[in-house]
Length: 220
Image (cartoon, rainbow, N blue to C red; front, side, top):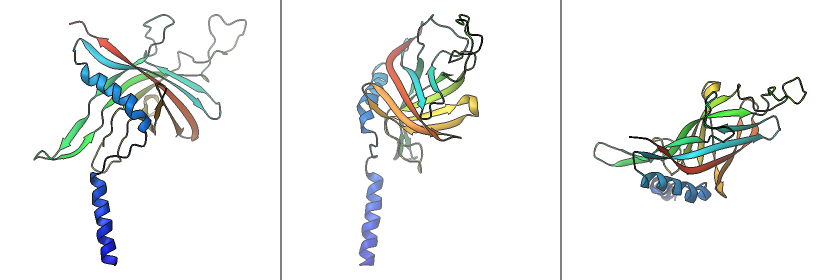
């Protein structure tokens, strides 16, 4: 009986290697799959497809909220207009052996750099309304830089790495020693949302990410 049980266990383990990745965020398959098709079907070098994106966050303890967009600090591209970040496409890649056997397929993703503004970083605006202290939130002279990667398809980054599902988000805090955060997002009503506990306080933070199809036009 023990030998039979051992064989059954080995069969199940081997079968698991050939099974499709578990879709932990099925709600992102449709939305992000559509974005992936947008990149694959637009190949004009004069009009590079991108995803315009903005991110807002809020901490559970109310310590601060943040807003991230594309225009770096000091670069103004439009008066009073939102400047979404351009997330650029990196297609899925098959990793093969020397004889062509597919070991795994890396997921497609969109990535870009953003500037983050924080509500607890105060400043005194020119129109200070009679107040002579820093009362206004989101100081544009004190922003952070982050790199955001959003996975659009299922895949795997290495032989022993865990499967990645559409909607997984990776954020690198460029201004804080390149600390990396990640969470599995979900998609609903055209928004990508998620939660994570960020160090050192590990207070829960909510993320709401907008993604819109756009083009980066190049004059040839």
